[in-house]
Amino acid sequence: MRIAIYPGSFDPVTLGHLNIIERAAATVDKLIVGVLENQNKSPLFTAAERVEMIGLVTKDIPNVEARAFNGLTIDFARQCKAQLIVRGLRAITDFEYELQMAQTNRILAPEVDTVFFTTELKYAYLSSSTVKEVAHFGGNFECFLPSLVAQRVHDKLKK
Ligand code: PNS
Image 1 (cartoon, protein in one colour):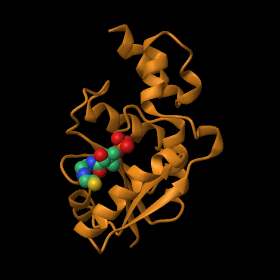
Image 2 (cartoon, helix red, strand yellow):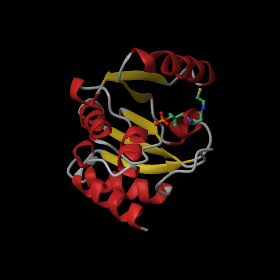
Image 3 (cartoon, protein in one colour):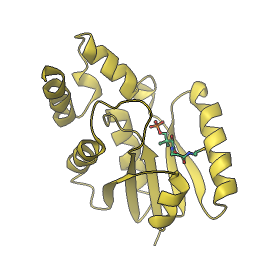
């Protein structure tokens, strides 16, 4: 069984992430979206909220599930019995960081490979941080997110 993990912060999951999830899921038997819990930055959504939102927006893709994780991505990959780590590459600016992570992970876990999906051009500029900044200053951010997630951001900012 071909299992891949797609690790990230997903705070919150964007249309760009969803596009990578759909394409990656089509290439494996199972795709586990790993939501990193122990971040230094204080997230807008708890890990449980992020996992729930990913579950809801991927409910029609049967081989996708979302789980929270702590610690190293390669340990999460091993727990999931995954052979692959999926990451999205948006632009050249992502490359150095992604290459560093992939090379480090490959030394730590030679049995796990990292595969990159190039982000669709229309999402190449998109990041959760940008969306949060636009939302924070009252801009129109709904077009960047699945509608259910956009509603959750509205609700969160009202609180
Ligand atoms: O969505 P992000 O914030 O770009 O995801 C980054 C993530 C979660 C993939 C990365 O920070 C990560 O793998 N963190 C877990 C700790 C780890 O394994 N570090 C070693 C990688 S070099």
